[in-house]
Image (cartoon, rainbow, N blue to C red):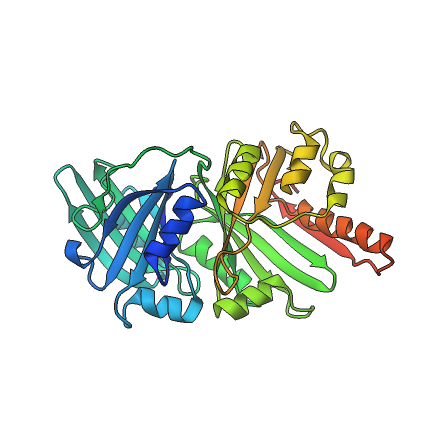
Length: 369
């Protein structure tokens, strides 16, 4: 299908302007375009935000029966569309449907003075769709005739570079079927898998990626035979499968976390004991450990190198979708070693306080195993 990468993601939200204020003020995105009934987008208001190579559409339904309204009613604010750029949208749509994809929206052409865009949609996981996008001409004309460009009102620092991956939670028993769907229908390949047990909880994870290496889904499934954990909680609050977090790559995670924290973004904390054995676990880190500790930035390593990562707190009332910032220094995996390290650090703190420590075990196969 000649997938060329993620073109954009679309969030369905209760209030697009309120969501844009958060992503703009706190996360550093800028408004690049907007559309609504006056531009031919029936029953919806959409705002296009951007930062470096990341494009995000925020859409609110203006009627109760609009797909964005029904999505938000069931799932809350969340990523509803993962759009990929392809060389031939109509051809890709026909090929995917022939392979068994659920057809949603047939190919449509959007034409402007300097650009032509062809889009089509098929079903993905849960209620999330995949939009196929073919672009000709001016690539800055996002959706000619529907989303009008907004003049830039100044330039913000480019704190984030691109979408690294999306982490997707699926109900127990659906992981293998979801992997098979992406292999059989979308032509992805499984590149990594692991099983992690922590404090009576357990989950399975498999990573699928397209041939270009630019579209990566980290699929997570809770182990139904163990105590419910964070994946189970997401599935309950979200009412089914969906994107748990969006991984955004940065070239300078220390600078990005410092800047976003000053803007009001709240990040998950890390036990101070985590840093006591950090370099014994991952080797010498080319960053001041005191600064990493102050910012709660995590470090992991695989055979390719290191990665630095941190997770935000969820900005949504259901505490579902959140963001991950990740800086890759050669590493190709996703920081699974940090799960064990975080729990071991917490155990040391609990042991010092006289509490009973938990146990974390894990196995992994694939890239970096």
